[in-house]
Length: 406
Image: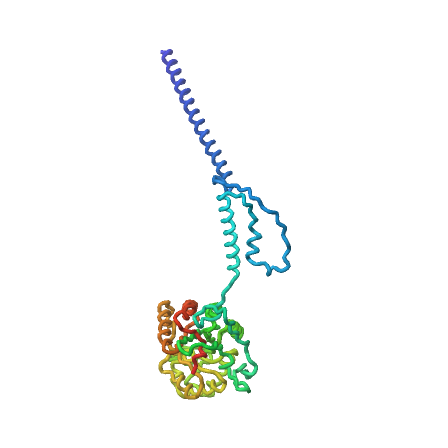
């Protein structure tokens, strides 16, 4: 009995020993695998730190002539070709076809990089002219508008500076207008007025910089730093107008703003308001109504306004929003230059509506002239700028609104 028990004990010990040997062997294998993985990872990390690791590398031994840099007295005397030549070394004639191809590729890359750097420093602001089908005219110098105000056209009042006719007979309508180049066709003319300028700084700056200079800009009387904006607009070639807030239907629930001209006021009271509005800035050639569907139906109110504007040498633009406006006819009767707009370009801010309006202007201008009035929203400004750039291709000419007054 004891022998059997001993034998069993001995057999159990042998099994345990065999199990221990198997476990040790598996552990050794696992340890080896871990070491291999860890070592491989270290090798990969080492290679990955080299940008050329794992990639075929061609090393060229190029014969380069030794060059000596010479100081340049004036950087403006160095052109782009000289810069390219200085950055690509002289190459010997003993290159294989493959090596020469690599050198040529490097030279082209250097040239394109310099060209991109030069282009990135060029900023196009608007266009010099879109008249006659040319976006940019190289043959004619750009039209430069004189700074404002002209002292002879300013009357100092308690309200502020007011426009007036100069002692020599010059009128703001003529002096502050953007000239039309000689030889511009009398027909197929399109004029655009962009309104609401001076309220939003970003929108005003965008319009001044984006629109071609033939586009007339109309400024509201309520914005800050208006005279600065007028100077910037004219420096970019744009003639400017003053917007006059006038009584709409539904006033005062629908209120255009302070000093609105009203049918309920006497001519004297409206004159006081009109002078306040006209004194907000100087340099405008004329005025345009802002709203005014009710005011422009009153013969008495409009006649008094027209008389004052004519006496100060201005002209009048009716934005065409109200078919019942008597202002255009009363201005003609008074012998005052006047413009009646053909169409509001963007009654809603919709690209398709804007595109349709511009097409209509071309249809009207095919037999004479057309005038469009637009808001200063960026979507409209961008659409007008894009359209104007191709206007000459269809034998139309863009002109300032003063050029179509009669």
